[in-house]
Amino acid sequence: MDVNMGDLDGYGKLKDNTYALNEGVLCISNNSPLGTSIIDDAIRTTSDTVDIATGTLNEMGRQRETLDHARGVNRDIGADLGRGARLLRGMSRRARQNQFILVCIIIAIVAVIGLIIFLIIKNIYDKAHPKVTPSVKTFHSLDR
Image (tube, rainbow, N blue to C red; front, side, top):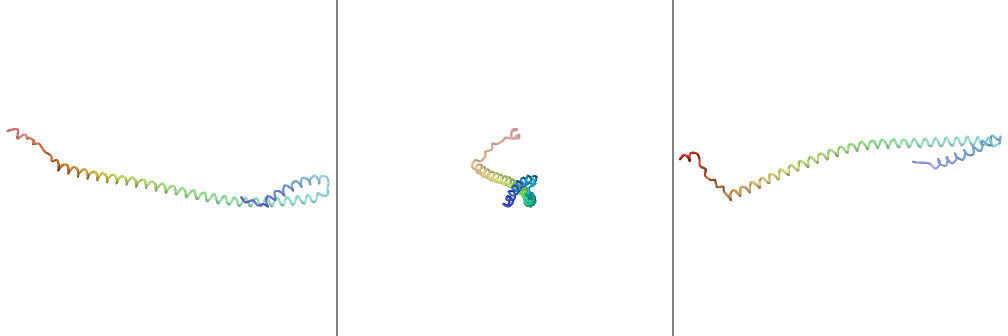
């Protein structure tokens, strides 16, 4: 907040003039010759008060414009954050899908390698230990 020192000095003047005005009212009621100068001081005080009030209103207007601009920027940032969050959710979902597909491919490759190793070992075992099949008698051979 930008406060001019002149505004603070004006407040001091206003306070002093209010005190002087209160003293002047007492002098006017006593028919003192100071009454005219006191009225002039009151007019000057009123003018200073109007100037201070105008300056304050102008400053408040500038601050309002600053706040409105900040509110608009904040709204834009909120919208950008929403778009960014949606984008990140989509990227995360695609990363999980790709990870699942990769795990499935790895499992399939390991299964194929395991099957190949199993078939190779089975083939080697079958060659080393041939099966002996017992002869089975058929019904025709029993008739004899």
